[in-house]
Length: 169
Image (cartoon, rainbow, N blue to C red; front, side, top):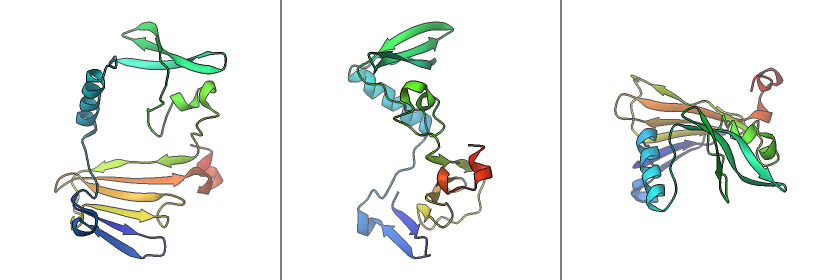
């Protein structure tokens, strides 16, 4: 991305250009391509990459997480590791498991991303952010994906939401 436009809660606008921030103000990537490349790099670095596998629980021993229980092509298996990372996104199921609840609060924030296609937005900047004003304790974003589509989203702190909305999260 060559530029970004950021709006503060009071409406103040900051334009971040290539001249101010260098040639890489930010990136928009295709998630499937990124994930595939990340898996290839991990494998080259020595990781075992297992696809079509769903984590179903954590393995704990003496109060420490030592791996995960998983389902792979209908079969149960255990995968042991010195580090377990719950990288399944903001709607994390892994982070809700009892062994991890002290480490992760799934109600801390919520995000609602979407892809609009087509869009009539005229992209004069590469990315747009609204801090606080459109999203209590969070931000709203728009990232272009070519000239006719955009990723649009909203991330908020759950404790800033109305109680009736909080109960649905």
